[in-house]
Length: 310
Image (cartoon, rainbow, N blue to C red):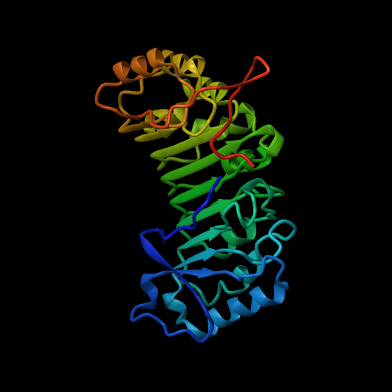
């Protein structure tokens, strides 16, 4: 579960926007948070909030936006259309986080999205896009030369979205995070749908790859072990998932990983001996094995869970 909102985004402190507020001395030095308090608020209330931001904050000071509660997140997608409409004015916008909601507001797997492709098309200079939630999320393959960081935080990532990311031409992208999640929350991404991402052909600048929070983390590790994209990475993140000794052995039996600066395997289900083998095999690599997990046993059956699900 995700229990706290961002306090900073892209290095900027997050500041909630309220119509009529006194602006900070440098309004471009914050990430503006847009949120209505009522989770059942009329869509017009959020539209009015966006309009007020457009009217009251200088356009060149809107560099980062964090979209919080917009009203009925269980049923309505974030108002991407409002951001698209503002694109001609917000030409300095470089970072967007769609749906910084915590579990008390809406469980991550219940967050409803729509097609986010128009957002990328409307902002060719956008550098950072984070999206939380995967329910009904859609993306078409696009070419975007500005994007440096793309993050999908989900309890279940649709395979169609993973495939679309692989189909995108993103020559400047340095960081990509795909939280795959669980099948029972819509996480149906397969190795085939990850193939283009793992090939890295359209991601020449990629240095940080997270294919994490995966129910079938062992299969992901097997695929990563032979993935061409790994050779160009500095950071590989397979954390938050159901990674067991089987996946760790597959990873170590694959291509060399000693060029990595960091390997993130926190929240995994590795035995003590497997943990020792990973560390011994990768001298000079920072290996994060924090938050070790053990299977939960009910009625003589073992259960293992991703860090973020519902």
